[in-house]
Structure formats: C-alpha cells, structure tokens
Image 1 (cartoon, rainbow, N blue to C red):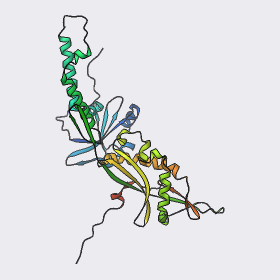
Image 2 (cartoon, rainbow, N blue to C red; image 1 turned 180 degrees about the vertical axis):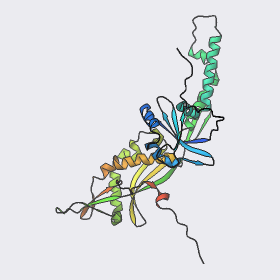
Image 3 (tube, one colour; image 1 turned 135 degrees about the horizontal axis):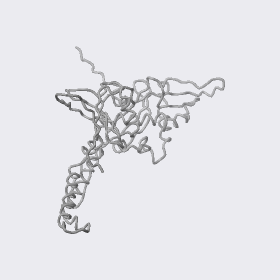
Image 4 (cartoon, rainbow, N blue to C red; image 1 turned 90 degrees about the vertical axis):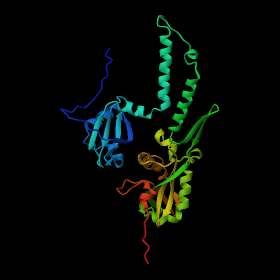
Length: 340
C-alpha cells in the first residue's frame, strides 16, 4: 500500500523564482467531478459560473479578486479571475482546494479539540506499551473537564459562524445566542401585463404597466392570496433548499409598487445583516428562477379583475431589457447642485 502524498500540480520549466500574488476568494463554488473536468477542459469557453459572478472578479491594489471552483468529490480546484469576461482569462490549478477551504473554515476550538483527542489517545496507548490487547472506557478516556470546555467553545464558534447570529456567549452552564436584526433590501423588475377584454373577435394584448397603477392594491391582494397561510411569512424563500441562502435571507416577499409614474414588480428581502455582493448574485439567480418557472409561472395564469377587463401579471419576461436589481441600481439618486 502506497501511503505517499500525491498532488496534482502544474510545473513551470526552469523558473528562476516564483512570485505569488495575493488572491482574495470572493466566492467558493462546489461542483461535481464531471462538471469540474468539463470546466477544466474548456477554460477558454464561456462558462455559466464565471458569467454569473464576473462582477466580483478584478485586479485591484495589486490583489486578485477571484472565484474558486472546486471538485466536491476529488477536491482539486480552479482559481479564476476573468477580468469581466465570461471565460477564465486568468486561472490557476489549485491542488486540494476543498481541504484548503475546510481548513480555513475550521474554528480554533475545533483544532484544539483535535489536538486534545490526540493527546488522550497517546496517553492511553503509551501507558500500556507492553500489553497486546488494550481496552478503556469512554468515561475514563475523556475523564477531565477541559474537553467539556473545548466542546462548549466548539459549539459557540460554530454558532457564531452562522450568518444570522450576531453573538454567542458561554457562562453559568449555558450557551446563549443572539440573532442579527433584519435588514430590508428591495429588488425591482419590470412587469408584463396582458389584458383580456373578453372580445371574442380579438386576441389578448399587452399594455404598458403604467396604465394599471390604480389597480396596484388589487394586484397585491391577489399576490397575497397566491401564498398559503404558512408560506406568507417567508414568501419565495419557502421553497429554497440552499442553506447558504436560507440562513442569510429570512424572507422574500413579492408585490407591485408605483414609482416614477410606472408600476414595478418588487421582491422585498429581509436578511440578517447587509447582503454582500456574492450572496446578492446567488439570491437574485434563485429569485429569477422562482419568478420565471416557479411561483411566478403559476401566478401569471390567474386573472385579476380590473373593471370590465381581466389582467394577467407577470414578474418575468424573456426580453433583453429584463432585470431584477436593487433599488439603488434602478433608481439612482440624483444630486442637484444648488445655484443662486
């Protein structure tokens, strides 16, 4: 059996010196082994993950801001800085990338626990070197208070790593945690409104959303009824199975809002603290899927009475001008210079 360390690496020939650059990983993305091999074999081709997170990648102050795509099975990874392009303009093969990520995420107490277990094992085995068969009870092996303290710290540090937790304290035999306050972020999108005037000789037709500002309340009431009672509190987050999203985003509630003389679709996010750019991209991707093929696909098929006509309201369309963006991007504040 060969127990020697094996590393997948890329060698450079006769390099006089290696000069590494500081690389900041803005987003770690686990993929299957087959997908990783496909990406690595086509680094100069357009890539979904690179395109999705290209806004996070750049070179600033002599530091590379990158994404790390890694093989969740094999463990190796690709460090990518695309310079705003949709392919891996700059990349580096990273052996054992998964282990590096897990080591980075490991808490101090977990490292101490591992070392403590090692010391307990050594003391047990070294105490009976002349014996062939050895046995010890779990209580005897861990018969000290220090391991209980280390375990409590492990729990505390694990709790504090949760994005929804503000603080965690240990004392008097208890572990207490406090959640972060909820922060509101509003994402806007254009609406597509189809009208049925019940004219048997004419097809359904589309009208600008601004024509139906006065029916805002009716549309919002219909949206509210589209959710079951136990779904209304968290809205579109209800069906999300991505823990990276559900632990950071408490709710995502859709509604319509009149602004600047027009009617817009809104998804109001309640998050634990501010949403960082990488998470906002992931959340927006999930929400667009819900607006297009999930909740939104069902909602747009239900008519809304507006006088003599019925309206069908969609939060999504396939046009190039479609967007789902934060309020500050859709309605930038204008600074007016005061003049005498």
